[in-house]
Image (cartoon, rainbow, N blue to C red):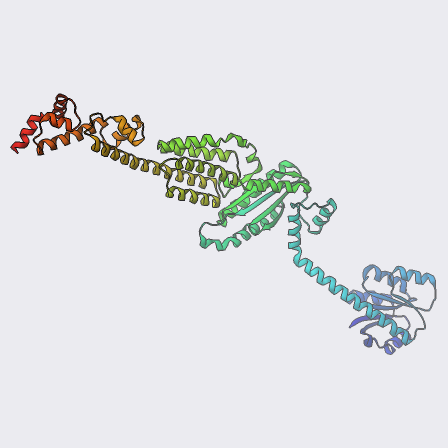
Length: 536
C-alpha cells in the first residue's frame, strides 16, 4: 500500500477528496490531509509518503514552492498539482520541478481515479526497478572481492587496458595503488614433505594470504590478492623508486617473519623489479616469476630480490666435455675426495650461471650419459648401473632443488666408481687365474715367455705385469719357476728319472741351471731332495 498526502487550504475540498476518492481501491493510503505546505514539510521529517497531491495557491508556501522543496530534498516523491489557473508559466515551472501532473479544477472523481491508477503503475514500475537494482547491487557487493581480485589479476595479464578503464576501476574498487612507482611480489608457501601434512596446504595458503593482507593493508603499502590457490600476489605502490623498493623489502621481511615464526609455515617470497606506471606492472610480475625459479638453485624459505640476480654468467662458461672428462678421471682412479670436490664445483658453477631447472637437468643427464657411454665400451658396464642411471633421471625430474640434484649425481658417481673398481679387481683375478692356467699347461715349454701369456690374454706386458703381481703377489718368472719346481719335485718323488731328464720335462734345457734353480727354491740339490724322499 502506497502512502498519499493531500494538501489544500480549503477544508471543503480536502474533505470532499478524502471522502469521495477511493484511495485504497488504487493501492493508496491517505495518511494526512494538510491545510498548508508547512504541515507537509513537518510531516516529511518523520514520514515520507509516495504521493503528494497539492493545491497551487496556498498561504505561506504555495504549491510550486512545495514542489521545489520536494524536488530538492525528496525527489522520489511523486507530486500532482491541482490548480484553478490555466497559466502556462505555472505549468512550465511544474515541469521544471518534475511534477508528475498539473490538473485543473474542477476535477471529477473519474479523472482523479484515473490519475491515481497511472501513479500506481508508475510506483509499481519504480519499485520493480528498485528491487532489481537492489538485487544487482547486492550481487555486486557480494562479488566485489572477487571482481576486485579479477581486476588486480588482469593488471598483470597480457590483455591491454586503457588508462581511463584502469582509473575507473581503481576508484570503483577503492584500491590503495596511488603510484606512480610499483613493484610486484610473489608469495608461495612451501608444500610439506610428509604426506600426512599435505592436507593443510589450502589452510597454509589461506594463512599466507590473510596475514599478508592484514600487514599490507595496515601500513597502506598496496594491494594483495590470490593469483592461484597456492600463490599470493602483492602490488606495492609508492611515490619514488627508492621508496617502493624499501617498502617491498621491509613489508616482505615482516610478512616472512610472521608466517615462518608465528604460523610455522615455510615461505618463499620473490620481489620483482620496480616499474613506472601500472601499465608496466606485468614486467615486474614476470621478473618476480623468473626469480621464483631461483629457489631451485639457492633453496627454500627465504626472500629473493631482483637485484640478487643481476650478475648472471654467460652459459658458454660451462664446458660439459671438460667437466665430464675430469669426473671420469677421478672415477677411474678412485679418487673419491677429489671427485666429491669436483662435483661440488660443478653444482656451484650451475648455480652461479642461474640456469633454469630444465637446463640443469640436461647438463646432468649429459654428464651421466657420457659416463655410461664410457662404461659401455668396457667390461664394467652392467644392468645394475643402467638401472641406477634410469633411476637418477627419474629422480632429478621430480627434485625441487639443485642441491638435491648434486647429491643424487654424487651418489651415482660413487656407485659407478665402486662398480668399476670392484669389477676391476674381479676381472684382474680372473685374468691372473687364466695366466696361471696357461703356465700350468705350458710349463714344460722351454721357450715359454711373458710375451706368450700376454698374447694369449690380449694384454700389454706392462699392464699384465702390474695386474698379475697385484693379483697373485708373484711376478711371471716367480710363478713359472714355482710351477716348474713343484712338477720337478713330483717327478723326483714318483719316478726314477735322472735329474737331467726331469729338467728337460719341466722346461729346462740346461741341467746345471736347473740344479741351481731347484736348490734356490727347495734349499736342496736335486740329488739331496731325491735322497730325502727315498729315506722317508
